[in-house]
Length: 299
Ligand code: SAM
Image (tube, rainbow, N blue to C red; front, side, top):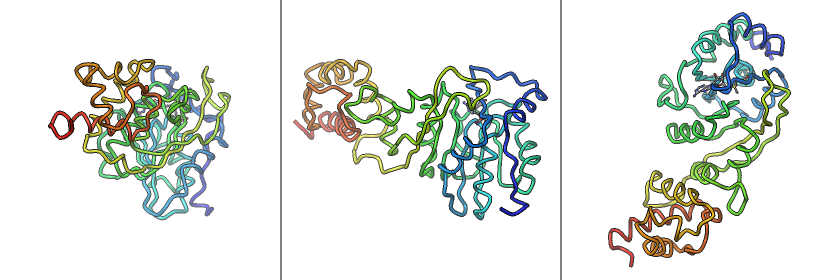
């Protein structure tokens, strides 16, 4: 790496020193557990790559900048590759550009910081993100990933660190005990896989949960005449009462148990099955079958 690309990652002492200087006391409400171990953020940045020229890496919740600096370091050799970081805490968002200028002085123009709630962002100052890389705030991890995949079709892949149980749910397939709403909705957008485990000792403050990395690659959604919203409504209904058969679980959604049975059969799925055994394509077929039956196109 050239001298102009040198990056000084944050260690435990640096993170505590910046937090102390800012008077920051990490809050649980915002999921503020900062990574204090350079090896961990380098691993995440490596998994986020390899980057191509012009890649825009969206980071959610950069905090004090531990992962941001590693992403800037990984992007440095790639022409035009840059990081856009969205941070909800205004104090942290205001400090981050200074931290980058201080610790990656030759690369400060490769990162932008947007002070905003990631759950509300619909544009990134005109930049189209191509990848997501984040140590996510754990209480909103799944909604953030789903919101960004819906709002930014340009995101082709990503790597996120989340609570271990949430990671397992995001990556589970039909038939798994932990397969549920997050698994099925994420499967609409992408293929997700577990990419590693992270000990709680790499954080300050140390959380009371373990963490895992989830990598995902976007794929085309299932072919269906139903909209994503309609399909997601079926998923919510099926898992709202996950121990019940589809005939029972979908009865309110369909209007009655008999109507649910007709729709599910028309979709080629057994009404005696449970949501936990269905692929995303089957949820999509059920949503489409309801519209088709309502239109009199299927009997
Ligand atoms: N990336 C940093 C690291 O690895 O050290 C911090 C990760 S910390 C687990 C989560 C960060 O997300 C915090 O900085 C927190 O303020 C921020 N955050 C929480 N909710 C957010 C939201 N809705 N939108 C954007 N940032 C959020």
